Amino acid sequence: MPVPDAFRELAAEVNNWDRWGRDDEVGTINLITPEVRRRAAACVKTGKAFSLAIPLSEDGPQLGFVKGRVNPSRSMIMINEPAFGDASMFSSSDDVVTMGLQAATHWDSLAHVTYDGRLYNGAHPSTIDEAGASRNGIDKVTTLVSRGVLLDVARVKDVDRLEPGYSITGDDLDAAEELTATTVTSGDIVLVRTGQMQLLHAGDKLAYAHPSPGPSIHSVRWLRERDVAAVATDTFVFEAFPGDDPDCLLPVHLLHLVEMGLTQGQNFDLEALSADCAADGVYEFLLEASPQPFVGGLGSPVNPVALK
Image (cartoon, rainbow, N blue to C red; front, side, top):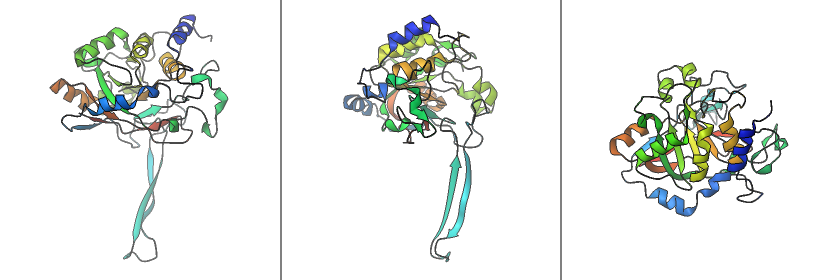
């Protein structure tokens, strides 16, 4: 199926290839400068901390939609085992885990998706093989710390959660930004709340996964114009799914990761943070959300922490 012309035109408009040099592998994370981090640190006023991660367990949201993407499975490899044959001296308990790197709260690397022979910054799709991603892997993102801004689209629309499949537009992000009484600026990490996470909290994994609200192709210019460094949602798919155009599968993934070099996050639990932001009217915070440095990884689990 050919890529629609309208998609190609938008891709050319928002493209960031060569912006930070031909060798760049982290894209918009380059926008997080020391000055941006200093501004982010100044957001900490009360010392309140919010973890935005969902639990890493076999009861996670994965239902087999994506081949091999399994929930974390942890098992013991030793239990109170004496290291030197004498339990009175030293014993150890260890465990091991198997999981998809995108199974729970996670960041996608810029190598996570390709289309039409395209990979961020002109890298060839053949740079991804059985060893992982030799270009644009998640290990290239050594730190991800900046000012976070919660754009609470569900709250600004005065609903618990957006309708299934709702497509968030630039106008929706404008309205949510107005609620924050701040302006999203270069280097910020934007967290978009839809309220969809409430379904996972209630145990309805299928409804949580599909259909899902999220950013649509009509939000892409907004994020590009603001020079956002990274963006995450409280949903399974990230973007509105099944989406507005049946001829273009997951177009926001393609535009963000391939064309813009914009790192995406999914399954961020924004419920407690949203309640606190609504209570004190402060929607900005220091966000520490660095991925684990899996060499060649196509993504990484993360425990994002918002500090207010």
